[in-house]
Image (tube, rainbow, N blue to C red; front, side):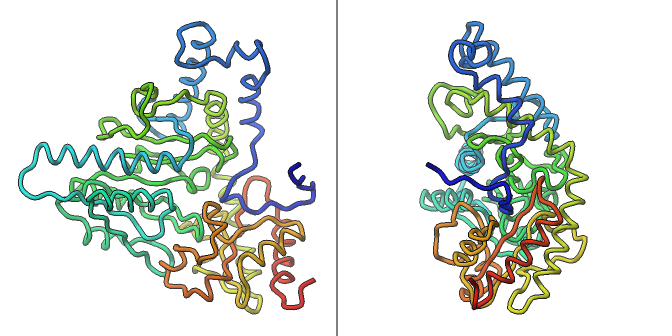
Length: 404
């Protein structure tokens, strides 16, 4: 039987996942009724009978709601997936291959398709980029500066006539750096390349208007904003070249085959809308908590902020605090804090079982010894000032040599 988290447990790993929000739970409830009662809403959205039509109508309502909340132009620009990992994979494989094929058809001479990304991307982008490289694509991985930012000049210098796709995250999941996506997308488009962004961490933490941002594709996940796990989307701007990554029944206008998770999609739409409505106030509140925690932790011996986050900074996510604890290992710190009732992490949850230092920290030029003591504390909707005060004390105790 799984362990039960006590009411007193302080959860501070929101960058990994947010607890299911009340809005999402309420929206999903009708789809979770057992037995024949479920057929009122729970049919296959691709079936022609009444239960199927009801499910399809609900799914399209959710699609339109998400379209409006994200600033997309058309409902069919929203492609539902199983999560952001699938969306990232689909974007890199689907857009790069389709764009390269178009270039070959209209071009002449030697052409080796080129993809540009960064060294601090999530593994869901870095892994498919590596696969593309094995398939004959040239791949450039831009190095960030010490604070985790990608300079527009480095992209301009790397892009060339063969570049078909640029993929740069909107915000880093470990240290919180927010990239100048609109500027980078403009550089890509000027050179004739397409632009994709993994916007998972930015959603609900900063304004996200995909139309104004000027990207051709974006990946998002429901569970980062209080929606259910296992649901995400790929935003594909109209007329963006795309070769389907998931093949089969031709759902999602042929761009992602597989029976849609209507319950999860309804929960995603509800959670996203709540996050967008509350974003301005929540961002300001979380930024104050972030600044307070950075100040508390940075004043302790042996603890340093991984990046320089000035008080009130809008260049970093408002909910992430990342520090390096000298003489400690992340795993030890995480387990000690967990025993005291605090849930934190060392970095991305997708690589939490790896003993190697984070690739993000290595890209920032942080040596292995210092990177071993990485600690990420991420906050969200239910985080209070009392939680911040308590975890600061707990970190001081957990990092002490005589901890007990």
